[in-house]
Length: 266
Image 1: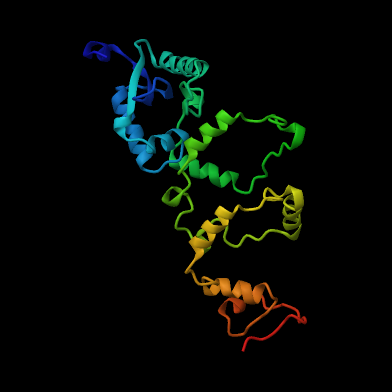
Image 2: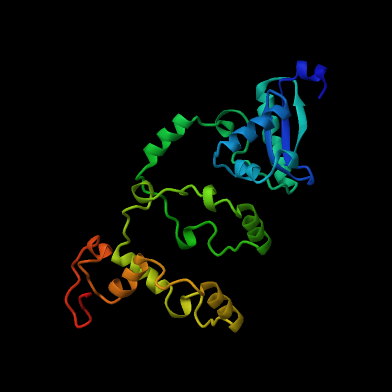
């Protein structure tokens, strides 16, 4: 875009893609230059914001990316918003795998919430009963994603929840969102029924001799039990034993009833 065009334009519609590919992964609008808008996106992605587009940006270096000006709008902001809607629709129709979360445009469809607004919405929705559409009520009931689509999702999400990329990385004890949660006996029984017998994905399967040898070699030299916690599970929990000298036994509810299997550690 020339300096003359920039002086009279309201904004531009831009598309972000990999430099080696022709398909766009994101289409947006800006009243600045497309290059400066991409730099802003990269800065937000580096801050760790979780969005499909920002997750995708974090997987690539700036040198891998290309940004193209798809259209220059010279009338008004309303026309700029309508142009974005049209470009998003047309690129999706052309087969581009866009990561846009909205249909584009100005107003609610293109509005970006502030962190304060997001926090207020989170507080309002906490504890709210969700809408359940089981069975035939679900719009995808009976449907099945193609292998190509499953493979694309697998490649896209690979590494996004590993290590520091996991939103719960380094969160232990009371800091972990699952702390203190206990499944009800009914839920445990339901899960057990769903995985019993032929319903278990490993039902009837036997590891090959090569796999067994690999597992054996990987575990060779590792003491068993590998930790005091594992020893407590093996020799106390699994056998119904409660030891007054075991710190893990004393941390749990000592209500194990006497049985022929119960014994006291010496």
